[in-house]
Amino acid sequence: MTSKPTYELLSAALKRDKKILLIVAIGFIARLFYVFFLYEYVELHYFGKDTAFANTGDFSAWTDSIKNLIHTGKYTVNLDNEYGYFGRMPGYALFMAPYYLLFGEHYFTYAICFSQIILDTINIYLIYKIFKQLFPTGHSPYIAPFIYALNPINILWSAALYSEGLSVFILILSVYVYTCNTRSSNYFIVGLLAGFNILVRPQLVLFAFLFVIFLCTTVFIQRNKKAFISLILFLFGAFLTYAPWPARNYLLHDKLVLTQDIKGFPKWGIDVNSYLQYSVSIQGDWEPQFSQILHNHPFQIDKKNAYVTPTDSADLAKAVFLSQHYGSSFSNWSGYWKEKVPRNQYDTTISILFDKLQKNQMQYNPFHYWVTLPLQNLKKCLFKLDLTQTHSSVIFKMATVMFVWRTLLILLGLIGSVLLFKNQNFIFKLILFFFVSWYILICWGPSGQMRNIEMRYLLQVDTLMIIPASYFISLIVNHKSILAVLKRGNL
Image 1 (cartoon, rainbow, N blue to C red):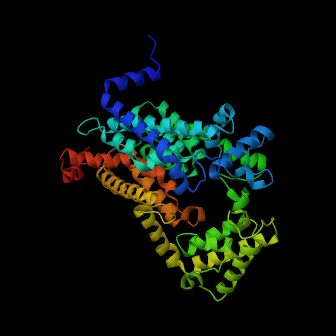
Image 2 (image 1 turned 45 degrees about the vertical axis):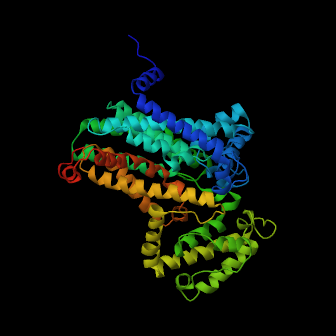
């Protein structure tokens, strides 16, 4: 007796449950509506792109890497810089490459956009299966997929030419494989997916790390031999997909780069990198001072926090002047006030000055650096309610609705996670710890790339919070006693 192909099983399951078929259809139509009627406007006023489906920004870096690999045999964003080899991790590039080869440079962006929409539509069904498996009785399995189907921020990023959409799909698929099949061999598949997802978005290493921690807890505290086999399979799978990247970096380029290093981009040399590190050590953003450098305008800053040693004022003035006139990476940004500046010895001087100023903040202004600023970052992460850089009132209102809804889902998800904390299935704790630990890292981490917060960096952890949020909503809909759930720890 031969087993039916997966697509036939999926089709049969959808026919048996017409409600989820309807929700999936609604989600797909919503995404198509967004692309055909809103995408170009949003790309212009939200993402700041001149045209929709444009091969620009971060996306162009992966395209350049693919081109260089095809034409020179070298995977690099910049053939003229030794750090170009590490500028973009290869996960999203591997996803893009077949479209580039099949559709060509002028049309492959359209194909990728619509492929991501299809993957995001599949996520609706996967979330339905996950929720139904985790809560087989007493809860409506349609709340979670319905929320995801119409969640504005997921619709927005499903079509965007960034790696976020693909990383969300792989993350949800990983959770689906783990929850919906108990065979030990599935841990190998989860490992493969988790390892590859690190190559798509580097922060997903935290998900893989926490998965290993919870498996280790099961092995060593509960003395579970089956869990030990599952742990080995997961690690082996993750090793197969992730390990070739750092191995390539070390063996071929003599640098142990575990994720990526953006110093190979003309815009992200040591001068700009050090400025970013310094700026987020005194405030929650690198603007408007970054634009003041680019446009050769007077540099304005909060002197109370910026000047913590007698030499800070002079060092900062020197660093700003050199950045405005001789910073090569600054000169590569759009809007720079004069012609581009080639790489020169002043880049190192600028970097040393800004690094010194940042270290002074950490040493002599520690409360502001380790407490005040991170709490401001946390507030921004949880309660961002509008856009500050848009001239479109329509986009402003749309973004406000999106961010308010996002904050509400996060709060409901946190409540649901607390209610589920006693449950034996570690997936609930994994979702909560993934959310909390990433928010702590991105708000408190000493790296400028962490403290320079963008909402897309939070998309993966926020998406998983839909599951506990839907559980809490289901409790309310079914009039269940929350106090009783807390006391018993039942689902």
